Length: 124
Image (cartoon, rainbow, N blue to C red; front, side, top):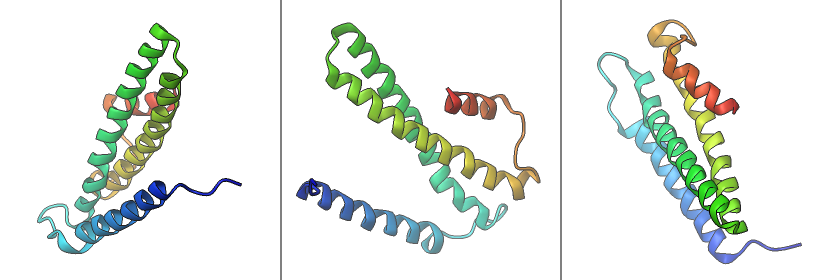
Protein backbone atom coordinates (compact mmCIF):
# COMPACT_ATOMS: atom_id res chain seq x y z
CA UNK A 1 0.00 0.00 0.00
CA UNK A 2 1.36 3.42 -0.97
CA UNK A 3 1.73 6.02 1.72
CA UNK A 4 0.67 9.59 1.20
CA UNK A 5 3.50 11.82 -0.07
CA UNK A 6 4.81 14.38 2.41
CA UNK A 7 3.84 17.31 0.17
CA UNK A 8 0.25 16.09 -0.01
CA UNK A 9 0.10 15.78 3.78
CA UNK A 10 1.27 19.40 4.05
CA UNK A 11 -1.32 20.55 1.50
CA UNK A 12 -4.08 18.63 3.30
CA UNK A 13 -3.14 20.26 6.61
CA UNK A 14 -2.97 23.70 5.01
CA UNK A 15 -6.36 23.15 3.35
CA UNK A 16 -7.93 22.09 6.65
CA UNK A 17 -6.50 25.14 8.44
CA UNK A 18 -7.60 27.61 5.76
CA UNK A 19 -11.08 26.05 5.45
CA UNK A 20 -11.48 26.28 9.24
CA UNK A 21 -10.44 29.94 9.08
CA UNK A 22 -12.94 30.56 6.26
CA UNK A 23 -15.74 28.98 8.28
CA UNK A 24 -14.88 31.15 11.25
CA UNK A 25 -14.80 34.28 9.09
CA UNK A 26 -18.15 33.46 7.45
CA UNK A 27 -20.07 32.25 10.48
CA UNK A 28 -18.69 34.46 13.26
CA UNK A 29 -16.57 37.38 12.01
CA UNK A 30 -18.68 38.67 9.11
CA UNK A 31 -21.43 41.06 10.19
CA UNK A 32 -25.09 40.20 9.75
CA UNK A 33 -26.59 41.62 6.55
CA UNK A 34 -29.44 44.10 7.17
CA UNK A 35 -32.02 42.81 4.66
CA UNK A 36 -31.36 39.09 4.20
CA UNK A 37 -29.96 38.38 7.65
CA UNK A 38 -27.81 35.34 8.27
CA UNK A 39 -28.86 33.53 5.08
CA UNK A 40 -26.66 35.96 3.13
CA UNK A 41 -23.60 34.18 4.55
CA UNK A 42 -24.26 31.33 2.13
CA UNK A 43 -23.06 33.61 -0.69
CA UNK A 44 -19.49 33.41 0.57
CA UNK A 45 -19.42 29.76 -0.51
CA UNK A 46 -22.03 29.91 -3.28
CA UNK A 47 -20.23 32.48 -5.43
CA UNK A 48 -16.83 30.91 -4.85
CA UNK A 49 -18.13 27.49 -5.84
CA UNK A 50 -19.60 28.98 -9.02
CA UNK A 51 -16.28 30.53 -10.02
CA UNK A 52 -14.32 27.36 -9.26
CA UNK A 53 -16.73 25.23 -11.28
CA UNK A 54 -16.60 27.60 -14.26
CA UNK A 55 -12.81 27.68 -14.13
CA UNK A 56 -12.64 23.89 -13.82
CA UNK A 57 -14.81 23.37 -16.89
CA UNK A 58 -12.74 25.93 -18.81
CA UNK A 59 -9.58 23.99 -17.92
CA UNK A 60 -11.37 20.80 -19.00
CA UNK A 61 -12.22 22.27 -22.38
CA UNK A 62 -8.69 23.58 -22.96
CA UNK A 63 -7.02 20.35 -21.81
CA UNK A 64 -9.43 18.32 -23.94
CA UNK A 65 -8.59 20.38 -27.00
CA UNK A 66 -4.87 20.06 -26.37
CA UNK A 67 -5.28 16.30 -25.92
CA UNK A 68 -7.17 15.98 -29.19
CA UNK A 69 -4.49 17.99 -30.97
CA UNK A 70 -1.47 16.12 -29.62
CA UNK A 71 -2.74 12.82 -28.14
CA UNK A 72 -0.59 13.18 -25.03
CA UNK A 73 -2.24 11.31 -22.16
CA UNK A 74 -1.11 13.93 -19.64
CA UNK A 75 -3.73 16.34 -20.99
CA UNK A 76 -6.40 13.67 -20.85
CA UNK A 77 -5.58 13.17 -17.15
CA UNK A 78 -5.72 16.94 -16.55
CA UNK A 79 -9.13 17.12 -18.24
CA UNK A 80 -10.45 14.20 -16.19
CA UNK A 81 -9.25 15.67 -12.89
CA UNK A 82 -10.62 19.09 -13.80
CA UNK A 83 -14.05 17.79 -14.77
CA UNK A 84 -14.30 15.96 -11.44
CA UNK A 85 -13.62 19.22 -9.62
CA UNK A 86 -16.14 21.02 -11.84
CA UNK A 87 -18.91 18.52 -11.11
CA UNK A 88 -18.38 18.70 -7.34
CA UNK A 89 -18.30 22.50 -7.22
CA UNK A 90 -21.28 22.84 -9.56
CA UNK A 91 -23.26 20.62 -7.20
CA UNK A 92 -22.16 22.77 -4.24
CA UNK A 93 -23.22 25.86 -6.20
CA UNK A 94 -26.67 24.49 -7.07
CA UNK A 95 -27.40 23.20 -3.56
CA UNK A 96 -26.19 26.35 -1.79
CA UNK A 97 -28.25 28.45 -4.19
CA UNK A 98 -31.36 26.45 -3.36
CA UNK A 99 -30.70 26.75 0.37
CA UNK A 100 -30.38 30.53 -0.06
CA UNK A 101 -33.49 30.77 -2.27
CA UNK A 102 -35.86 29.07 0.17
CA UNK A 103 -36.04 31.86 2.77
CA UNK A 104 -35.52 34.68 0.26
CA UNK A 105 -37.85 33.65 -2.59
CA UNK A 106 -40.01 31.26 -0.55
CA UNK A 107 -39.23 28.45 -2.97
CA UNK A 108 -36.38 26.00 -3.41
CA UNK A 109 -36.28 26.36 -7.20
CA UNK A 110 -37.36 28.70 -9.98
CA UNK A 111 -37.16 27.81 -13.65
CA UNK A 112 -34.79 30.67 -14.40
CA UNK A 113 -32.67 29.98 -17.52
CA UNK A 114 -29.41 30.36 -15.54
CA UNK A 115 -30.49 27.75 -13.02
CA UNK A 116 -31.68 25.32 -15.66
CA UNK A 117 -28.48 25.79 -17.68
CA UNK A 118 -26.38 25.05 -14.59
CA UNK A 119 -28.29 21.84 -13.94
CA UNK A 120 -28.03 20.77 -17.58
CA UNK A 121 -24.27 21.43 -17.45
CA UNK A 122 -24.07 19.36 -14.26
CA UNK A 123 -25.95 16.46 -15.81
CA UNK A 124 -23.88 16.48 -19.01
